[in-house]
Length: 291
Image (cartoon, rainbow, N blue to C red; front, side):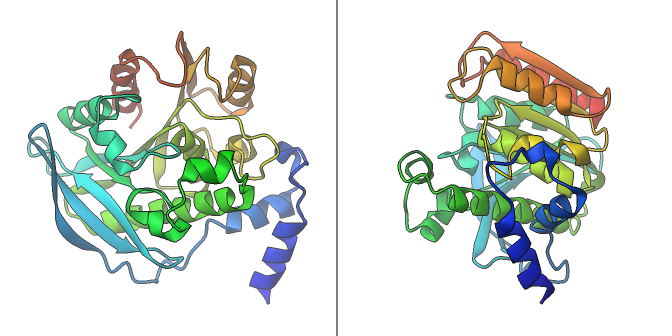
């Protein structure tokens, strides 16, 4: 009965309402969508390996709390401390986990290699409907889903499921002897940058946040601005562009200003949605200073 009440309350919330003005009860209902039964079996397994410039990644699969399988990649430095801090990497809309192994567009490969060289383990998942999970979206491209069909409800569902999946990924990491579960950071790009606000707000084990080119999503209950109240002064770095077609400089500044506390930094680049490669070193440096 409680679940039914939650759904009714969630459906009653207006998309047109200012998300930052949600009352405490409505916000609690919204946050409950990221909860899950921690006793639900992960059924995690290593199903293979992948390579990037001599770096080896384990192919991990575990069960989604919402049904289906969640594929991911995990790499752990081969030298240094016995316990490694870890950074979760969240990709953008229409990308997949392999974006963090490539050099084009978002320079994900440079971020990944920089983190591993600095002694951080890294893990990336396919967000719901992306990559190996396209089957759960009838193989419809997520970009088409948003920009052609305007399926906002499916987009919100995609975000919600993906956030729960990343929380369960942290549960899995807790079973690995090589990972320091007290030092977990997150880096997200575009849609992934949006998701960092949701994940950091709902997951206390996340200690620091890097959000890159966060898109503006006006009218959405799951907009990044909705969740700033729960960031609990976690260190936040926002890496934004001055000529991005998916948001304005004014939006970026307003979102940054709404985040409580002083442990935050906003940096603009003279670029479009694809940030210059220089941002990658700054991201690694921020993680190194705040994790």
